[in-house]
Image 1 (cartoon, rainbow, N blue to C red):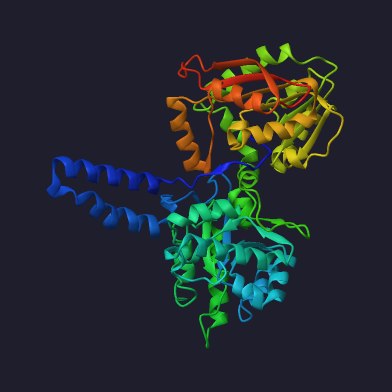
Image 2 (cartoon, one colour; image 1 turned 60 degrees about the vertical axis):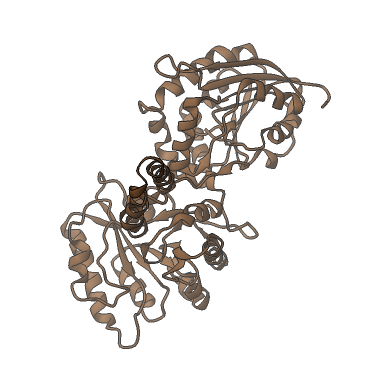
Length: 496
């Protein structure tokens, strides 16, 4: 569950950043005790860690990179980089259509701008399009972060003309860098790699291409191919022959060539309504992709003690403020872990969440349980139309995403009746919570904010609420210091 306001702090923390800190700490320690060996940590970092991080994106040292799907389904994805190209793209599209195969095309903005008809044809035939930077500069990852981000945004704008917004980015030549994670977070994309690379060098090495692509191929693999002519005299017939051999090899292994989104089980692109900004909300993109497995993750041993503690406190605490005739606004509803119990206790619930896919799952659960008193809204609290005020506004494990919590409280006030209750459970600041914050930043790229009781009380007072409950709690198993904070506050009649 997350907040529906996007005032969160993006934190491009990756294993490589921790390695830099570790290298610096080791160097400082050696300078103090063994100065002659102080150069070793930096040397090892430059000689081994840095090249691995740059050229082996599957190690995920700079940022999360998705290189393959699950092995449990007999699917594999064909992906084509560096197009569209008028010499090869039309031939490839006809080839794929004859075999009822759909693929993903990671196009460069520069070529897409020159050949808009080819982009339209790719989309019209049911293929997917990803962002491959604007200019495909092979040294792009060595450039400044501002330049890198500009290349991504520029390609997005070219493709926005065609009514699509890519959600997947593949870096030129598969190289990643320190700056890429932050650039993708700000533009709302995720990084896609590959698990099978035939080393065709942009179709300059056709001999044995299919054999190399199929070597060790397994279900869930993402195959890197190219949709571009390397120059005059390119043998397109031989190239298509290699593509045919790849398709036959998939079939002989009992695998089906499927869309990249089917293999990865997360969207590669989305429709872009006219006039809408081409940069999506990164939290929405993350949770849209996580939606199908979100409930399973929450039941894992690592998460479940915290979730159980939160659910137990909710069950015990919400009854003090909620009545059957009440209406409730829930912020960050997710897939409905708390929405469904709320709906069973009150007249109606408006569930707000940034992720449309999460809300669709919530709606499906509500139908299964015969609950007709749940409405949903995908977006931010600030985008909600003012309507009849609610009796209760609540949120669970959601406000930690918010940087300006007093600002969010002020946005909430108009949705509450005078004397109405704001009830929420959020992360409490503690020594152990810090490590959870680091883990979340490594996984998601968003820094979760944890706040103590005194700080939370001050924020509520400043926004025009009177706190009535502020209690820390945690799991009986291992979170004994209270990793969560329960808060309830009553709306004052006038803002102080």
